[in-house]
Image (tube, rainbow, N blue to C red; front, side, top):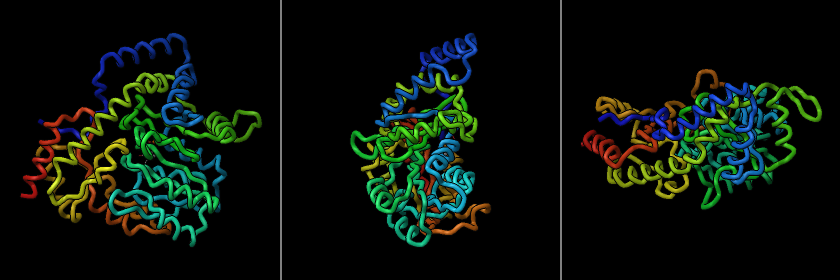
Length: 366
Ligand SMILES: Cc1ncc(COP(=O)(O)O)c(C=O)c1O
């Protein structure tokens, strides 16, 4: 049996498909294509789920990052701290507002934004903003980051594109935060649209007003230049229909992560510490091996057994050809990128699937 890496097109729930199709039919019948009742309903429910005051849907997760930076007033001449381990979009948003990314190193165990590196980099670069990324769904150490940034007047945009279902701590979901927190609902994400969508969470009424204006051509009390980053009504209808299931699916991912944790003990690979099991959304399941060579061989072996696996991220952003000119710290990030392999992860993996993957890894090392 093949253990797929993703399973995102399989909703495993016919009822929801029927609901979604009915909603799409009624949106077509009513020609209510942009910003309809499901936009408002989703924004209200998602904000409540994440313990935030406002949720503003936008067209995608990259726009969410860019708009967040813009409403904080980040622009040309400003420097923004970005971790080396993330998807290209995090740095892209900084460049798109005309600011300069500066690399913040990550911790070598989980690949998360490192507060100590932040202190050193800020002393040298005087950052205007930082973008901790809850990468793979793991929560960044926000207490330390918030405390340093508050003291030093640094704005924070939390990139939670992979973190729908992540908790900072017990009863405190990502979004229960003083910062702007952005999500992507791209089809591979834990909560996903049938196309592109994203959102920004905030507790700040003034920032919410600015985001509302920015996403709709600057329309608001004072006409300012904005853009079109509205979320289609059909995507909002899909997200709203899927929201009640998301918690269940995220719990299933946690169960898969616990099974991996148990099954992979005693092997020459590093799994993430057990305390992450309850906290992470387990968007991905990364493990680390001792070298790039072992990673390449293990990946080839697993793929030969039809077990999907991918090195997310094969390079740090600082190693990308178009970004090598930028400064900062990335030593741990480079090591992390070279040694990491993501194993199959989705809510529908069974105990047998996990044993098949761990069994193949054992065979490889034997
Ligand atoms: C960490 C991170 N940030 C930002 C994005 C951008 O989101 P989108 O593709 O919806 O623009 C992604 C999407 O993969 C992501 O993984």
